[in-house]
Length: 347
Image (cartoon, rainbow, N blue to C red; front, side, top):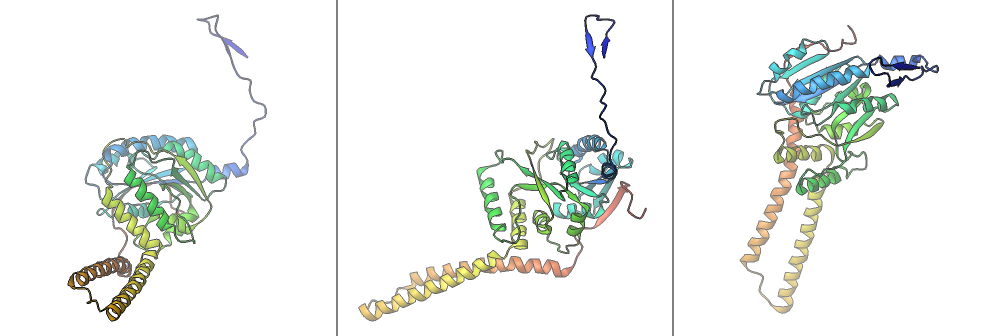
């Protein structure tokens, strides 16, 4: 069919022929379209970025055709996060959970997962480095049967060589166990089916390393390569010490190799000391050389004391985490909740 523009007679627009093979959605497709989605966004001092993110996220989620909600967990922010989100909490899809203080990102994620009501939960950061444009691909993989769709960084070129080296060493160490493997370069940006979320929420531990817990619960997982976008504004609150603390939490939560290393080092030093003592004794009996003087003794004592202190520190890390667990304190405290989001299953 052709349409001629009266203002420009020489321009003819060819319209595509109507499709005759169109079929109505099947019952399975209609059932999937009715499944609900929850977006969980942990936030700390991201007032400027959140307004932009939620606007883009709303457009993306509306385009999916699924009922949805967005849950922002304010992890004790000191900026204008609450004021920035007030216009959104008046809309039915948005909820704001404010924690009583800063409990850390892992606790904020857990708070969001606990509050989420959707059939699937999508985790993403508030700094716009996790692009909502990847969400349709995640939903497609979920529809195809994946229980978890997680993003994997394609490269780390923007990071320093020291950080890339440390990241590689960490994953080698934490994956030293053969029981499960934490995907290298995988982040928190992911989609999880409701049964995966329920499995995570059933875990009682309070020192939570979420990347390890995602891998520990298992289920069918599909990787989705992506490149993080630059931060829209502001600076990250994570520094080298924060990353080191997170790495120690991950190592002590999912592997006991540091304790085994202490045993191996202790046995090796004891054997070396026995051999050296035997050598000195034989040398004295055979050649009559005097036993080494105080310098050797002091150096050896300082060395062994250093090894003992390191060993005690490693043991103390595990004991400290046992102490945190047995106290049984809640992982977070909710100060207030605003907005509605999706209806509860009983509503």
